[in-house]
Length: 293
Image (cartoon, rainbow, N blue to C red; front, top):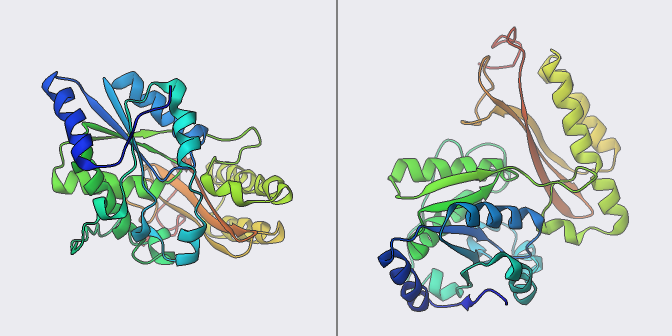
């Protein structure tokens, strides 16, 4: 049986009122649809930890910088409902644009600091759109736990900062990235690649994991990063927007003794691919060798 599709806040309130009255824990998995195994791993985690699970499906116009990208984003509501059927999801919340942003809506939520580099630099306003919509969805669903994939690492840190700063009564649960057999991180955007492009895309995580190994063996980051960017360009990724080593939590400069992260965004066949992996830097690393100020 497909997950029941709820479109109005009134209908959702009727469900969550009853669940909360019964003392049941509510979990939410926010998505923009076009569901794949990565999303389903979040659903499985939510089902294991919560009494009731809501999956939201809303293609949020406020986090798209390019109107054409928003128009091209896959919309597969019925297929998504069918994919969720075996997982026992309690509601698929598919609000309209006016339900999320009623006429006259004039409030934007902005998270400084962690939102600034990387995606923030290349997609101005993107994280304002993310922070605003997740705040709205958290309030609409009244969930106690929200599940996010680590593939969108910077988004995860932005949402964590948002919840901490505003003392929102919800726990953010990070879940590992899910990868295809060839290593490519699963993404709804992968559907837009041709068969040739999809095969070519598998080189992206290969370069990332190879670079991580070099850094963990003591390679100096700046030349190693430059070589990896050049390698991606040679493999047909153009442009390579960024390939950087950052602190895992703040996304500032990496520091000795702190968890670090490699993050990349690169284009292939007009599709923007992002990925990230953790890096354990040598204990002997210094601030100057890591390029930190």
